Length: 326
Image (cartoon, rainbow, N blue to C red; front, top):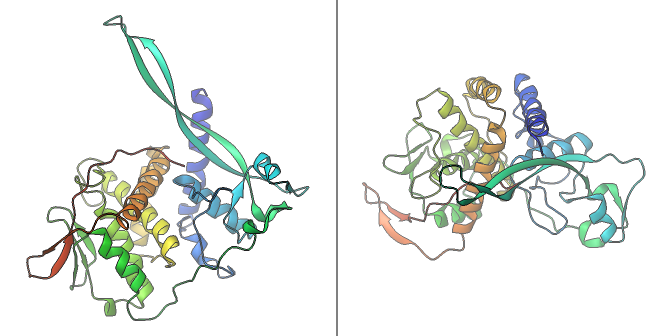
């Protein structure tokens, strides 16, 4: 695919995100703002049950919201036919992207030897929601119910267990929520300081996404980060998306933070300067989600204590390289 088409895809997706942000709307927040939704939000899935990743989550959430689909499963026209089904006449497809690399052998001009190069490419393609398809097997239509976390107070055992298994050191107290990279801990106000438990856990998912950036984990680095600069905006965008993706899996409604307006302004500036940013940020967020979920089934970590003697789980894991999975 030549550069013209690659730029067109980056432009098309980025302009859609920018248009929402300029209206004061975070596009990854819109699915939870849909009061008409009859079912909890889920991450979109392929016909084989695999979840979509990266920017395709945002594109398919937007398509589902605008067209009123409750089913999280999507497939191509050909895939529907493979199940003996067919897309209903007049239905319009939704557009997503596919990223991969091609391998090419070239002659090194300096050494004269052969070198293997990986050339990334991106293309768009069309998919249909299961609700647009007639004749699908029942497994695509009668999906098991996903419980939705309701506002209220009290701990959420399944989320607490998820956080504990991550190995993150989480300290309680104070009036600020943040991740301290130097000392490698998450600081959270007590649950009672939030308006409800959903708000508390939504903020915690944001901070634990930041936690994955550590050099002993995913080693995510946008350069020297200073509050308010472009590197800061990029990392905050990753944490926002990571929180949204994680909240969908845990049944939590993401929290709109108090610094909503300033973040949007910084993201707009960064997105306008880098048409590939939303793709990279969404890929980083998906990598963070995958990393956290993999920790749920890893070996039992060592128990350590923080500076106040409070028991904590601490784990170091190998650095993983980013791949643009969609």
